Image (cartoon, rainbow, N blue to C red; front, top):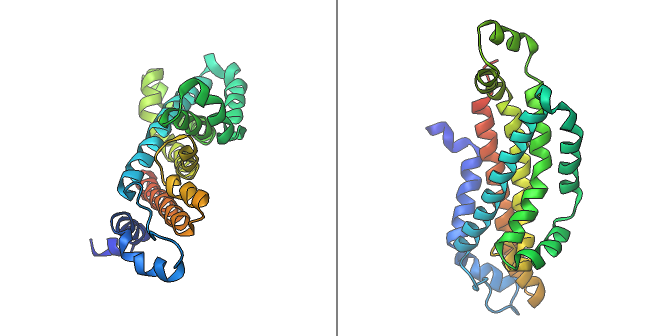
Length: 243
């Protein structure tokens, strides 16, 4: 337990929580640096509410992207689906290269303003890293282990569940880690279409020429991404097989 306090995730996480709940403690600092800005701390919404909304958007989009990507990866690595691998990669690549702002512009007329177009943009943007890693992880399972499993009488489903997915889990998790971290930063643009995120103080600050708001939103979203990435690193170490 004592060694836990030496890990970066704890200290960065504590800094994130302190700023999230008590940004007002920095009011004198912002007042000294930006005397012309009143009020010094963004107050249109609580930072905790911004975080919960931001977290919800990323979690919803990432869960959907993970489910679809892993399912597609399983399908295209089976004999029946190998012919569709190129198509699956192409669709995921299009989602990754298509700018999220363009997705929002196309989605708003159909889905309206708010969270739904933001979730769609994050979902499309998060597919490729997970799909590529899931395919690599499943194809990286040694053939000798698969043959041994078949020799023990395991069915295709049992091989997938008990051999392939557990062995591919660290590689799949690495893709999810990249996708989620990218999604946390990208979700800020959802504020341009009415979603509540850490981008809200950033864009309000840019529109009103209030740099403290921009800094507050940017620091919080950066710490959010760093803490999430460090937590994934801890989970990855736990999933890594011994040796």
